Image (cartoon, rainbow, N blue to C red; front, side):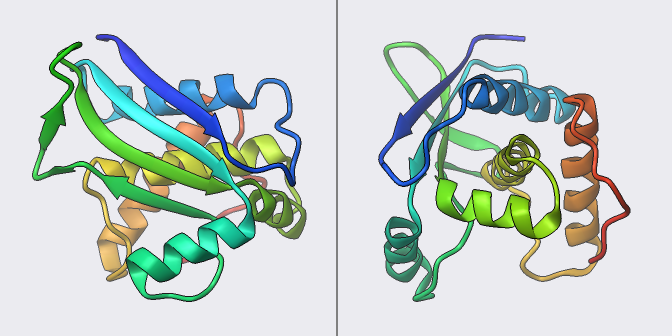
Length: 164
């Protein structure tokens, strides 16, 4: 696999980022790209925010004035991506993850923060690669199966079957 650069920024102070979370995110990005057969050099940006920051972004970009767990901002369409002319890497896009919401959801679903952050990263990576679950149906099921495949590869399988 070619060089994958994952740029991680922490723009929140609400949740202390546990040791190993950054490495988990990098491993997750690599696992999704490997699973999808994406072997070009790539760049992904991941930013940690709090619930208020993600609510503002959700309102601004999706017209939904509510907090959410993760937002994806793909830089490509139909497999065509912007390229960083200095490195030659394809710029896949930005992932914005609410650490506050990730902690809440890990509690709610009864699993660790690592699984929640890994899942949200896999979910967002699939969005950056063009997957969409908004319309439901088979695409939603396929996306969910791919998310769980990555979680299992990373040693973070779900504790029970999922529901759609």
